[in-house]
Length: 577
Image (tube, rainbow, N blue to C red; front, side, top):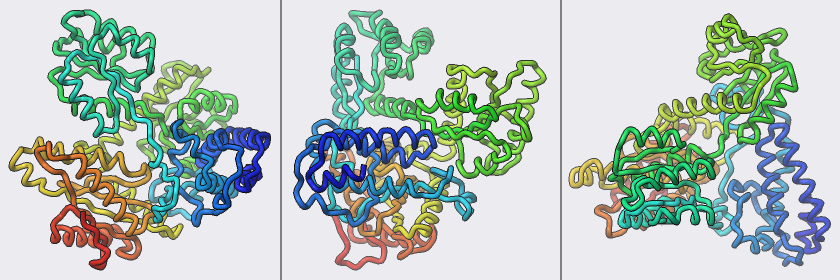
């Protein structure tokens, strides 16, 4: 692979060498997946995709330059839209390909470890555990090429089958603000043809068409039979219980009673799409039979679940702490330590006592089942394992856990993290910054004029402002950034790998987006004031960084609001919009 990239930079890559490199990196993807090296596998997938489209033409000398920093954000580079493919062989993008190969080489040279992803504070403080995955960084120099957001992203497509012209027009307009696209079908008789032409991500279906009273339910049945993977959200003027039952029978994902607003419809769409996003859960399976473990991997891994397997139960606790799984699958009968004993150990630990546990057993007698539940297990699966039963029970437990975590970790109005959860996450990033000597931004946002809006238009309008700001922040920041509401009108952003100057620029971009979205046709203007502090220059813990950012906000408000101030900045560094 390195040989192919070197040849590409030099301008003499042959088609044979390109194919060889592509084949080798494809094998590497499979091998890394097999050993659970998620970060390396993702890098290899990105490289494999790029190698499909690089052109076999001579490049300019500028293509031989290297980045000052190899570590870049490459999360969204696997699925590049077709209009941009011809740009992949530009000199700057060839540099990025070389950077990705260098990153993959670094990843493969890391010491072996089962650890990947988030862990509790107790685990990160343990010097015996090696962290393989760090949050990706964004370069401070905005002039450098190939930021992922330079490529148009695929927006979710909503197929709206509804005869209400005014509602569908409003929905089309509002969907733009939600980064969604809408295709409207006013005549239900055309729905099947449109569906066959372009498969949507979700369907909004009105059950009631005056001229065709039965067609709505018939379409729901058709979609369930022909496109069971496409979620259907049903709305209707007749809020009959019999309709609710029938919609549930036919696999409808949500039921809304009209009248309904475009915002309510789009909120429901967003909730459904979030539920359907691929799972990133980790499952630790312990069984002394390698064939059983391979079956579990075969059934669950294609569904997006990361599987960690263990044949020696005496290594269970070390593996548990190193991997931080979301669910355990334990065999009931194992030598040395059986599944019942392992389950009891987990239930007595302060950190892991709430972890979902499934036990595998060969016996179906009532005494065995009683022992399983008495030990604290959540469910059981009889051997031999079948795919349908394993998938159903595992995903049921994961969804319940996800819901409970969401209720405890999320601000219910805005959908962003709450203060408690964001504090835990930011303290984790503080430790990573100390360990890897990387910058870390702490930003506070204060929504302007919220009190006046509540007094003049009511709390419904104020809540709408808060909710929309939360949506924009979730959409515009990276997945590894922390976005949270700290109460009232105050939001918090944590940005790993960015210094103060880069953090200010990022917040300015968000402020521009917010200001442009709410134009003069809105009853109120939605803007915010923000302060940005940097670890360790402006503070060494969350309390001192909060004070520095809060002081910057006060200076921003004193100058007229609607601006972003850096902590401890000179007047010349202040940027006001």
